[in-house]
View 1 (tube, rainbow, N blue to C red):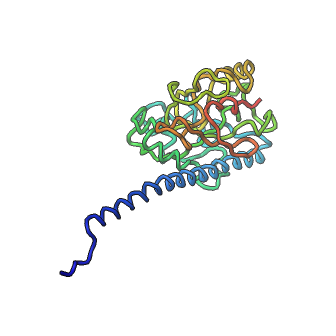
View 2: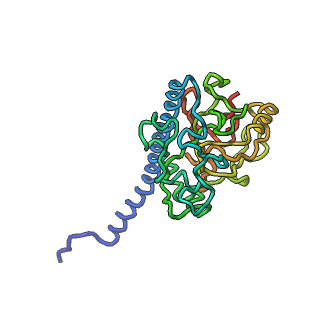
View 3: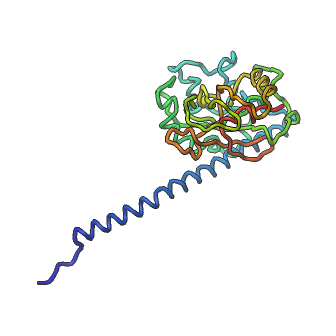
Length: 289
């Protein structure tokens, strides 16, 4: 009796098993490759901010762009001139500004950027849709879609900071102690970094770093400048006990845990170089003196 041509059930199962095995091998590599590609795009984006800062300085007698006004004018909570309100029902809700597509960027260095696309890290955008405060409904206006418009923040000690014309801010790029040791623009998490996070100890640190707020405005305000000054003077650049930061550098790039606490962020420094940074370095690299 002639056998019918075709695959037996056993043969099909073997083929399916082989395909599944190959996919299990290839998929992690593809995911890693995608993450690396996002990192490259992020580095190219944040480099544009460094270039924009230098261009602004050249056009303004060495004066640094104001940390409050570099992207959106008067975007600081508590600024009496700010058009943005702390009201979840408002279409200008302060906590939704970073993903409000109806707001036009009108800040000081916007015209120096190569395109609107460079304002957002693709890795941040992917995570923010799942993990941000707004995605969780915290102080969020549901009428404002979560479409990240900017994901980078300026060092608040450069500028100076908007209406707070204090002595702890530098106005000229020539006032920087060491441009290679001061970040100009960095990344914040789209989520809070709690004190219970599993980050390992950093140097002599005896407590784990934490932050109170995720990305909201466009400046990375680590701690009150007067407190920053006392910490730096007491402990130097490698202080023993890091404070709880209001804002801190992010942890979402190459995070080794599902919560996104064990990674790092990108930063462009005042001399133009790009560097991977961790939240424990938020104050060290912010302090310009």
